[in-house]
Image (tube, rainbow, N blue to C red; front, side, top):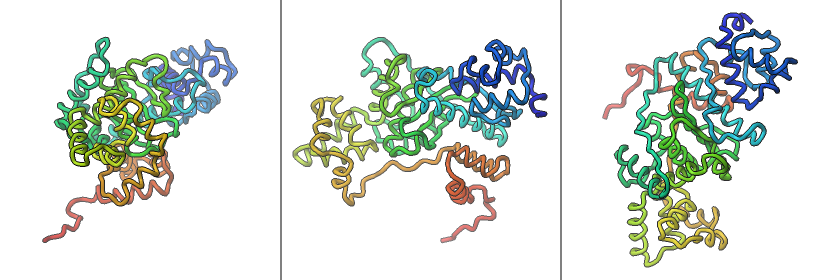
Length: 391
């Protein structure tokens, strides 16, 4: 491998260490794979010792990365794993480990393509919100309204939170299929800036909630990230207080207290009571799930605590919600195509990457990849070649 000889040992060692950490592999495990002792891996990662092509292939296989990607001169390799404060220990939760690797790969490739295309994403981050001791609920409400004010949206519902995060805050956003056990992730690194990952397989309202939750982490702690597990796995162990804040922030940001109270009063006055149908309508008005709205109403003491659990026990489920909606034309959160997808397709159009690489970057099949490319083809047509309709 000529690339192995060209890459400086120190840089190769740094990349190998980053790949090992991303795969949650210990130095002992890496040494065992190539038939060496741990001190050999230490020397390789420090750049004090070169390794053979055979050993490189063995480590790449163990780290689930490709030799080409590891050795590519313009590749970005950062030790993102150490930034993920709540990433489980080795072997504790493979889905979370895999998702952290996905986020690292997507973010690094994104930045590489931006540089090749001359299209850098300039951050527009608000100041970090410093948490004080106690009164987490009040601080979450204040932080949510402060950010809403900076974004100029006041108390209005947010129909496209994902688009708002990317276009206004300039956070790197990825919406790709993930294991069902993972809702999303947040991470930050100087070479990649802030990154939010959202599970494309989840419902649109769930995607918005995940993004708002990760936005809460972004607001209070730029340097440390997390993998958000669907069953609340992100709330265990270190960082419990911050995760509790993020959860409260998400509710306050998506459903501002003053706006929810006003809409709730209007519904009660108009119908004489607040019914399950009212709950569904109110939830859709704020582009959230009925459960999220019910929990928020409980939090604001407009519902008694435990109201939603009682509703669910009495049969208020997804099918009941669909029956309530019927043919009603209530708003739904729009599908958002992140800039990452546009950058990747543009790179493909300029033959900087292959169709296979594009599909791998978007984490979808070849057929769906071709459909996306076809749907975006007009974006790169010169204006003078586009026929304009005249009235």
